[in-house]
Length: 398
Image (cartoon, rainbow, N blue to C red; front, side, top):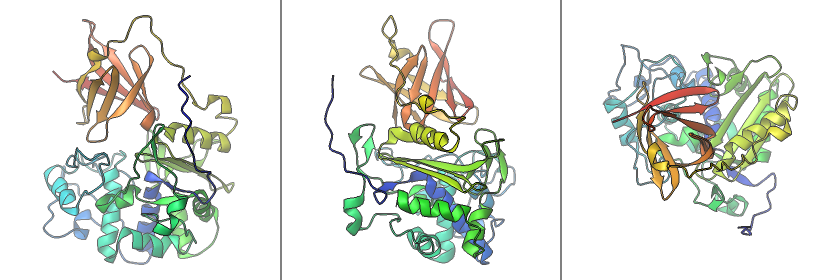
């Protein structure tokens, strides 16, 4: 019932997908490689690589370094607070001038040191590399990473000649436009690639080759700081050192794609999952986890479909509507749109919420759950974001 036939291209190992935030691993590798060549140091303060007129807000006298950007410890939020809110792709058209204004007016939310995932931080690192080398991110990636590894199907914007190989983007099941993560966000999520090319990159990560590039690739695997929500943080990579599950990994999501890459350097095993729907983030990670650790992640546990929640009385979506704020300053906005709940974290896009239990909603697009806490009067006093084993409370504002 309700079935609509949809035409799908036949995917091959050469089909091109947006890989989203897996781009960050390439950016961190590029930064380490340029450091080894004496072009910069990851210990450099960020300010020395930006125009003199840019005045970066400093918290408690602690300056942000390039290492902080590469390890998500800069204190910068996940996204800047000044993108074009009318733009479905929050990265498109974001300019260097907007970036500099954000650094001066808002900047980091706390002193550097604590690990907290930041798109703007890794985008800044890519921007610094561009300024340092006087080249675009695309040119740097091609010259130093993609061409040496023979990744001929990987680029920031697919070439016109590759148009027939590009998968159609989907928001859920609906076709949507492709993203171009332009300007200072390029290093955070602009690369497009194929399974064949991504496996070449995976092979480079398990290679014992002694080239300067391969040494930098392996150096990014080393744990740099403890990240309670994901294990440890390497340079770009998330690092899991748990017994029996030692690996490095990263996932990615854009408006119409999801991706996952997991590698066990010791055994030389790697998995790449690419999906042309932004609702595949959780499934991609679960599939990757099952292929790497079938004794831990069982096939029957992969969340292909969470059963529909059918309460005895209709859900009062209106009681959840409002603004919520965390102690660190993060903000959720929750709206009721014709009987469907939507939420937005900070300046990100609104995403749909699906009820799965009383006061508990699933956000499929970024693999998280929102649990609303009732008050004594039958209303709602707070929401709790549950994601990657971490819980963050957002108190409802008056």
